[in-house]
Each structure stands twice: as structure tokens, then as C-alpha cells.
Image 1 (cartoon, helix red, strand yellow):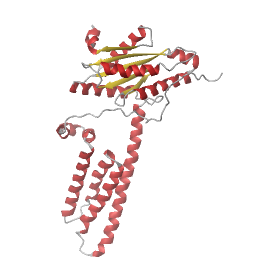
Image 2: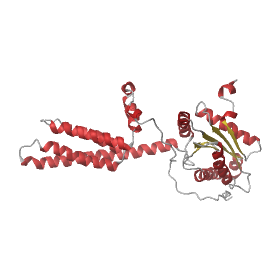
Image 3: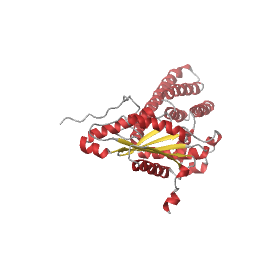
Image 4: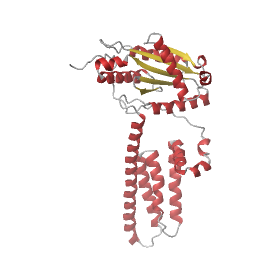
Amino acid sequence: MPPQQFFLVSVQEQPIDSAPECWIKRGPAFLSRFTHPFASIMKQPRRSITHFLRQQSNWQLGLGSALMLGAIWGVDYWLKVDLGLSILYVLPIAAIAWYLKPKLGYGASLLSAVLWFAAEIHRVSTSDMVPFLVWNAAVRLAFFGLVVTLLAELKAAYRQEQRLANTDFLTTLLNRRAFTEMLEQEIQRSRRYELPFTLAYLDVDNFKQVNDRLGHAAGDRLLKDVAVVLRQQLRTTDCQARLGGDEFAMLLPQTEQQQATIVLQRVFAVLSQLHSDQVLIGFSIGAVTFASMPDDASHALSMADKVMYSAKGQGKNQFVQAAFEQLPSRESEAN
């Protein structure tokens, strides 16, 4: 029996990045970036220093690396003896290559080699030593460049690993773990700046019948089509994820209920164009707008999940909205 081709989608799947770029930059005020408690750094130096560097902007990292290069060169230049300080040039080079760009790392390598040569040449008393210094500078330049190359390869492998850890394999949307982490950050940000956000929960109606009657390949194709619709119909500031099975989630930052209605109704309208001649396909969407903040990400997802099931209770293939104030808190639910 030939495979079923039954999904008719009015949108074309376009090449996309392997991982959604929907993380919203946020952070404390400028001065607080430089006031990390030294106690935490002493307790966990590697994690604390890495966290500190990641919080800095590009120009701050560039300026700090340039100052470090200048300090190393200054010490190297004014010392009367060679203490082998050239290895210290690797520190700012590595910071630039890892946290900025490899191209800038190669530029820092060239600058470091020139600075080392300038620090060494003032120590020689005869011109006979100049060729040896040039050779040594070239060797150091090659070494610095090799460090940058290795770091670039390592960073690419690290990003690939992070992408695989945060991405759903089938749809290439965010997975549950990554989405929950991002939702937690959005809750903290919205609580700090008193901004609303909307969380929507989507479930594919009769998805089990699709797998049973048409096969799992057809079910996978349906899930991919849903992912395409979410990417194309949501805004660039919104985030979408596959939580597992036939369940999806959408996060709309800084979005009040009226704005969320416009966006999600557009999503619902395009999803309704996905259909089959053999299985009745529908989509139940439950959305909650949080003007007041939930306890945490799991609490927010639980609320949106309940609203989605209320849409199923109204006959499936429905879009239902609610506000946080209209829902019971976790404490009252427990009682």
C-alpha cells in the first residue's frame, strides 16, 4: 500500500536555522556587571569567571582584553630580563577568540607577536640578534594562531552539542528542557520589569488516529507541518517548542491578552488548513496571559495546559484564552 500523502499546507517549509534564535537578551544594570561578589568566585572560580565573562558586552570584552595585552606588554618591556612572559599573551587572545570572533582572535595574535617583538628588541645590543627575534616572533604568531584555530573548532563543537541538547530532533524546535529554562527566565524578567507575557499550549486533536490509520511517518509529517506554521506565523520575538508527543508551547513575551489574541488566532487559522481525507484533524489551543507572575515555569505550563483541556472539553479544535487572575493559584489548587 503506497504511503499516505494527506497534509495540505498553504505555507512552504523554508530553510531554517537548526536551533531557534529566540532568546531575549536581558541583564542587570551596567555597573552591576562589574560587582560580582568575590566570595562566589573563590568558591567556584571556573563557573563564576565564565559566568562573569558571558555577561559582558562585546566592547567590554574587547576593551578588557586590550588592557590585558597592554599590561602584559608593559611588564615584558620594562623588565631587564626575559622571564618568558609570552605565554601570558594567550589569555587575552583566548578570551577574544572564544567570546568574540575567531577573526578578532587572529588579529590579537598578530598584535601580540608584534608587541612581544617590540619588547624583546630593545634588549638586544647588536643587530645580529634581530633575525633570531624575527624568527621567534613568527613562531609565537604561529602558536597563537594555532590556539585560536583550536578554540574556534572547540566552540563550534560546543555549540553543536548545545543545539542538540536544546532542540527537538524531529521538528528542530526547542525541546521541553530548553523551553522551560527560557520560560523561567521570562518569568523573572517580567516580574522585575512588571511586564505581561502570554503562554499558549497546543495539542493536536486525534493524533493517535493519524498514527494508527496512516502510519507514524504521516504523524511525523504532521508534527513537522505544525512546526513550520508556528515558525512562520509567530513573531520573531516569540518562541515555540515541542514539549513532547503532539504537544507544543508558544511564549509571547511582553504581550497582553488583546495582542495575543491577534497572533494566536492567526496561528489557529493557518493550522486549520492542515487536514486529511481519512482522519479528522483539529488543534486545541489554550492561552494564558500573565499580568501577575506565576510561581515558576511548571506552574505557568500547568495553567496553560488546563486552559487547553478546557478547549478540548468544548468540542476540540478550539482556541480558548484566560488571564492569570481568573485562574486559581497553586496553593488554592492544593486545597
